[in-house]
Image (cartoon, rainbow, N blue to C red):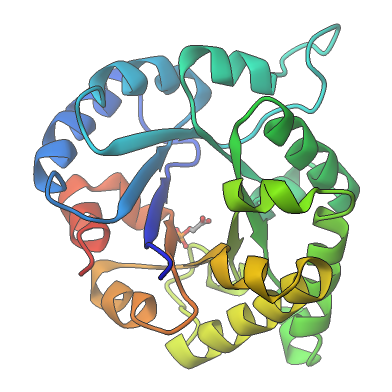
Length: 249
Ligand code: PGA
């Protein structure tokens, strides 16, 4: 049985003091949760978040990293830097990074390799645009994203990887994929992983749904056969609301 993994993606929100207040409140609300709970916070909040989740069941992730280990890359943050302060997860290839910061599938692949090399666990985002969906190309596009993302990634690393299916038209829009639809697309992703790494690996990989997840729809989404939790944006900024999602049973 795969566990449920519920990750908050704060995007460019929350100052350090807000981070501390959030964690103090949220950690009490989710202390009995049996799910894996991750908060992916902005770089400047990471250290505060790591200090304040000590002794709780909350893990901390970053939202991006650069693929080189060090050097003249002004403004970038390496995987080693994240790992050295205790970060465990890193979101890679979020659609906002693909759209606003020109991240290609090739870059996504480089970042995944760099993350794995320094023992960070990547949460890899894939998903189609509304246009691609309307043209009936969603599955084809996502399969391509998967093939490119996993180029030369070793089978043994697959247990440290999470895949998040996030239809772009559902992110921040209030529109959610129906649970059947999301489940079917995730099944197709599992088939693609199975083609590359075999059934055994495909069965074990954690696959999340993301895109306007809220406490009012999370129960239904997470109870689907292939959806192993969620990557939650807007609704993860409110401790009470996010705790209802993270406490999924
Ligand atoms: P949303 O964002 O929950 O606000 O739609 C999800 C995401 O972008 O990860």
